[in-house]
Length: 54
Image (cartoon, rainbow, N blue to C red):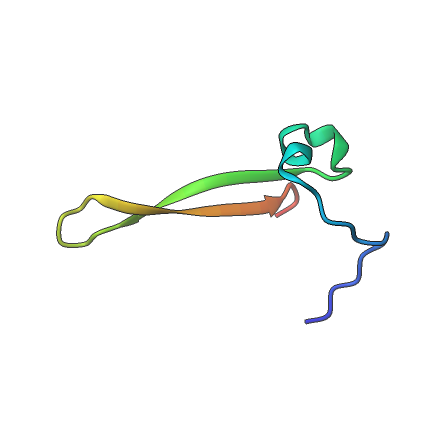
């Protein structure tokens, strides 16, 4: 898959993510638990990051 960006891509730092107005785009985040089937307890979390339009 070849993704084309409308503007030149430049990496962002963690500070830019904390202050989203500096990013120039919006996104949503969620943490999904990964469950141990035998115990029923979560043992890890998966970070899901998506654009606001899915």
